[in-house]
Length: 288
Ligand code: BGC
Image 1 (cartoon, rainbow, N blue to C red):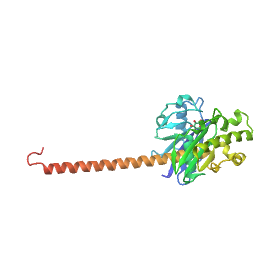
Image 2: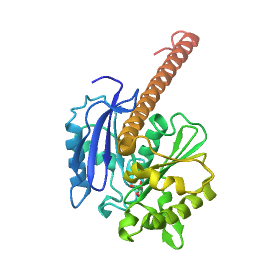
Image 3: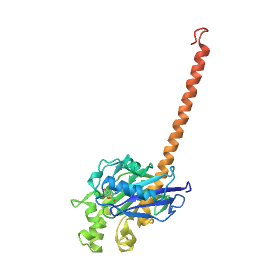
Image 4: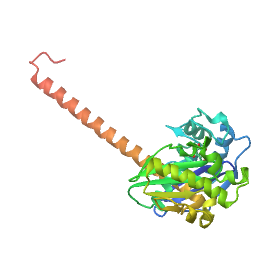
C-alpha cells in the first residue's frame, strides 16, 4: 500500500469499523470493514475485535493506524466510559490493542477523531478560527479545533442543563428514550447549542452522527449566532479522522526522533572536540 495511506478504526457501541484512508483526499482507499461490537464490550473482547478489523487489511509495519474510542482517552489511557463497559476505565487502550494486534496504534476520543476528520477533509476544511464539532448519537461527542489545533477530550456532551446531563435529552438516543417528536427534540437541541454558544463562541458548529443525514429536519430550525452545518464525512468521519490523526502523530514522532538523533550527534561531536582540546592542552607525559 502507498505511503499516503493510514488505517482508521472506529470503536462504536454497535459496530467496530475500519478502512484504509487516502490521506491526500480523505477518501476510503478500500471498502470499510465492520464487525458488530462484542457484548459485553469488555476491553479484551473489544481489543480482539479491533485486532481482527486491522488484520483484515494486513497493514505494513510502518503504516499509521488510528483508533477512535467513545470516551476520554488521555495519553493512551481510557478515563471515562459513559456509554461503554465500566471495565474500560483505567485501561491502557494503546497497550491492549498493540498486544492483540501486534501493531502500534495512535488512540483518541471518537468525537476528536470526527472533528479532526471534518477539519482536514470535510465541513471545516482548512478553516481558521474556532470550529466546534458535535456528534449526536447514543451520547453527544464534542471537539474543538482552533486554527487547526485540536483541543482534546472536551466532553461538552455532559454539561448540565435544567439539572440533567445534556446528552440525556439532546443526543439522538433521547428521541427514542423520551419518544420526542421533531419539535420536542429541536427544543432540547436549541437549549443545548445556545448554552454551548454562550460559553464558547465558536465561529462554526458542525453536527455529525447518523441523524445528521436528516439535517434538513432540524438544523434550519435552530437559532444561533454561528453557522451550524451538517458533517460532510457522515459516518466515515471517525475512521478518516483517526487515520489522519495517526499520520500526524507518526510524523511528529519521526521528527522528534530525528531531532533527538541530531542533538545526540552534536553532543557527541562537542564531547569529542573537548576531549581533543584537553589532550592537546595536557602537558606531555601526563596523558593516559
Ligand atoms: C462520551 C464522549 C464521547 C461521546 C460520543 C459521550 O458519552 O463521554 O467521550 O465522545 O459520548 O461517543
